[in-house]
Length: 90
Image 1: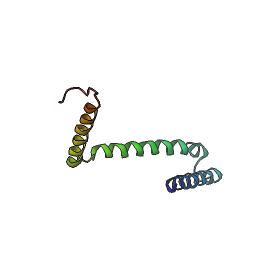
Image 2: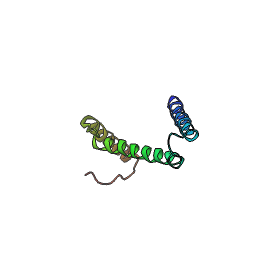
Image 3: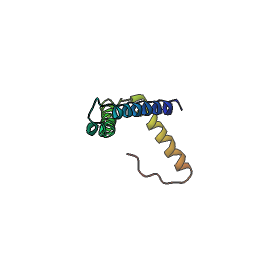
Image 4: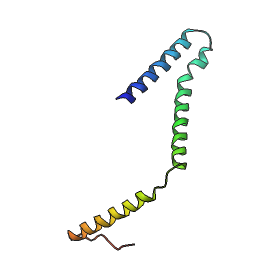
């Protein structure tokens, strides 16, 4: 729930800033109307960057790989005990 409150606070703050820019003549109105589009595009670029960095820095966990292999062997033995064909072992 805390994350939702942070997002809503950010949206309200950005919206208030945008409305304030619309009511003042600091920036021309033609540029001010495009700010939400720039914000959405920037947010999308930030999201893609975070995903890209996360993929590049994906951790290799050899201990977890061994645990996963053990779970697979255990699941195959369980299914074979139930009479289910699980295919060949590679």
